Image (cartoon, rainbow, N blue to C red; front, side, top):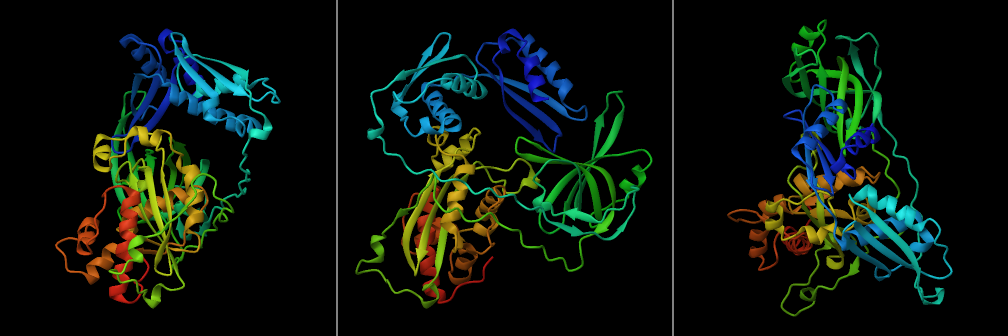
Length: 510
């Protein structure tokens, strides 16, 4: 469907090189926004024609908008994508090509590039693959050639490549209790855990208690006003927003449903731009098992190697000076903690509330036997534009994240860094941990949900006007660059150690 849509769009003269930047769905307004990028100036008429094309591919019950932007990449962006293309298609070449071996120049007709290749390596098909990859990422024309470099195999310093472990995430199900028909004709016996519903399926069954109901209206193709519902349901493992379009024969039964009712929904799950959409075709009654205790979800094994972000040894000078209390509480001895903090694109840490925000920085410190020993720090490319509010708050700019690894590359390394440790953070249980849990789980890495939150711990032990991180830091005489993950994590680690010295025991895990 995407290919057909693009072919029609590219039939318009000034959109001949257009690509899809994003497709987003706003749940509250039921509105789809399709964002296109093009490298040529376009007219209002062409935008109107593109809107007509999009209408054919978007279900009629959605409002929609087509937004078109003219954008061309710079030389550095193209160079990085060329490296990505080589890594994906030519493993042997990748380990021999340095960034300085790739030259990119902007021309009137597009971009030209050259790749310096060792004499012993065949160049057949390299530029064809690279150019095809670039055209998937950016608008415009690309012209490339391979040239013979002077380096030999003796000049190489090759880092060993490690294979990722193949692991299929098991989907958990539970038996539906006290099933009864509301409108269906087929008895359902099993439902998928809502926390595991991150896949596409033409027919999947879920079960949960209604937490929220919203009645909506839409106009169908016959210009008739119809009713549909948004249900938010919970099975204690997660929450899901389900859309249901009413039928005349069962509309009164559906209208009678209320918050607190437990229902069984069978329907279609789809993923749009990384966001799950569930459309219920049939609703009946049913419950989760009595005294439901979710089965522990199997995790992908801890990676054997770090591949992208490698922790660095850390020595805290203040831990060894003569003016600092360096005594270690007994409860910290023999234990390992990872104190972490995040910066994100926004505050939405629940996918049920809409498009989940992204992590843009992780900072973490390992505390072993009461001493800070290692640092894990990286920016993450969110693959979306940063808001001015986030830029002003954190000081993190587009330039700082655009060349950074994406979360799929970072999270396996972070999971390895945390293996065997208890997680610690300030307001972590209510915010930061939810991001870590969601993005690691999406890759098959499951945390044990062992978190010590220094926010309630500070509230328990200290008497302050508020318990923001900088206020607690001031209490202990610690100064730092607030709203940067690596700095906040370091300060939180210091605060954690001091709080445990006061309490003389570990708090309950959140």
